[in-house]
Length: 113
Image (cartoon, rainbow, N blue to C red; front, side, top):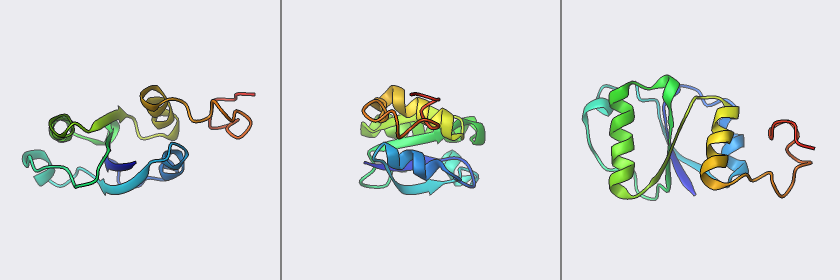
């Protein structure tokens, strides 16, 4: 699945978490540009999910992308920009990818054994 990431200047280890869920980053928007607050343009084509990093977004930017995702029938996830918060949010939304392989995800899965 292709995802549009909105918020945060740097992604750090987030691509690794997304990869474990089978999600590819199609585009990343920091949300700092003022045109992101006003414009109600459609999402890029081929996007299956919008991920909003709430601790790096203003209310108007978040609302614009959330509305665009809803309008186009695209799943969206809101969370803080941390690997733990993202993994928890995606796990609630899509199911836990570590359930079938708990030994592989000891640290990422919260210490499962």
